[in-house]
Image 1 (cartoon, one colour):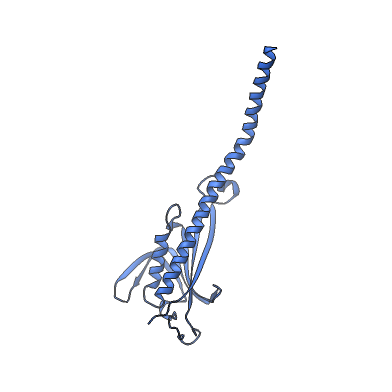
Image 2 (cartoon, rainbow, N blue to C red; image 1 turned 180 degrees about the vertical axis):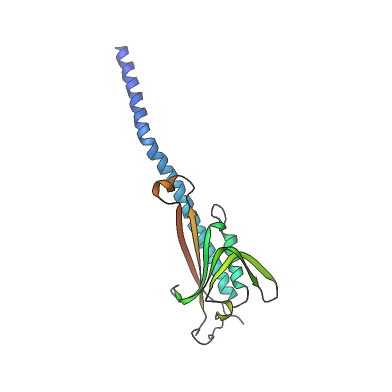
Length: 196
């Protein structure tokens, strides 16, 4: 009878190993998927903060020379690890309506790469790692006067900042699900502060 119990115990160990071999890949996949999702969510939140912060600076800068470079510098500063500023594809600064939608094609589009230099009102300049690829909303046409600036600018402008970010998968999870990463856009709009 003692031999019968020993054989039964060995059979249970074998069954447990087979069950573990079946469940372990699924468990590892869920752990890796959770890590990837957490990193993606962190990147999305960081880009959202950078867009909001840059939009507030755009509202404060209004039509002052060099405002776009201040915006781009802030986007660069706000994207901290595990997110990275080098994963920014482009930044769009645009004139928006009260709902946050772009008015016409009034935007400046900056693509990350190359260099762009802004000169401030006091004569100093700063260079950012972007290239201006479309200029349809230059700084001096932005309305920062409470009574309006004439033409289509009948009141203070609303300025939006949209950041396009490319999140790359850090594990083999991306290859399993297809693709190398995910591209998303985050935009924030703020009303320009009136200047004296």
